[in-house]
Length: 91
Image 1 (cartoon, rainbow, N blue to C red):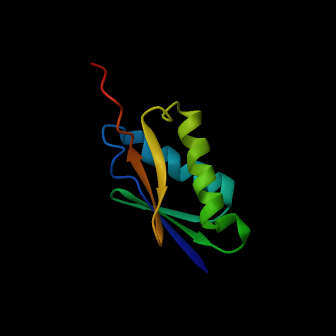
Image 2: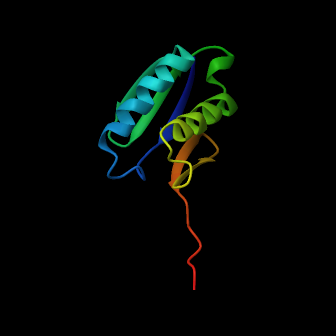
């Protein structure tokens, strides 16, 4: 059994987005997806739950909802994190 955690705490102000992400992950990985506060956990077995594949799925989700300009996916040792991009300020 593989367990992958995704920290979505920086998706603030996007109340329904965390629920939509959980549904999207459930649909794409066919694993058990739970949300606790600002963390989404995916449990299951097989290649559909590799860290690389889940990272790609989260990136596709951000693209689908046009959030790629604002957020990016970063991999930790044992989890993934959705972080807000630091935009360069124009002078």
